[in-house]
Image 1 (tube, rainbow, N blue to C red):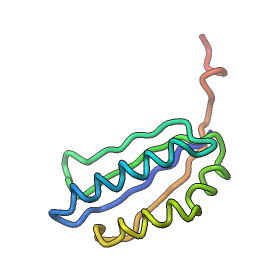
Image 2 (spheres, rainbow, N blue to C red; image 1 turned 60 degrees about the vertical axis):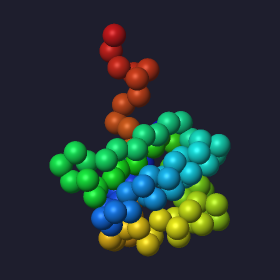
Image 3 (cartoon, rainbow, N blue to C red; image 1 turned 180 degrees about the vertical axis):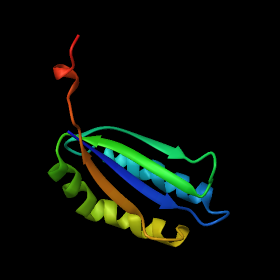
Image 4 (cartoon, rainbow, N blue to C red; image 1 turned 180 degrees about the horizontal axis):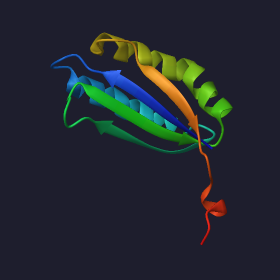
Length: 102
């Protein structure tokens, strides 16, 4: 499994629009093969900073969704709301719960 962390910085007064599009992205991501879970976070210290964390069965399944026309269309709508392009990072798990000592 992999964890995907996407960082976005929202322009002032565009938060409601950003949130709506992030909900749309999540709604579509949930239907994708390999999607496990996700959450959206907004920084308490810096309200312009938003993080989306999602878990996927395999990095290739994430990349398929990332490159899909459906996701790209929503991402194009997000871009004018951001101060910089989104930054996505992929992380592999060091251990799985099944290997953790009891």
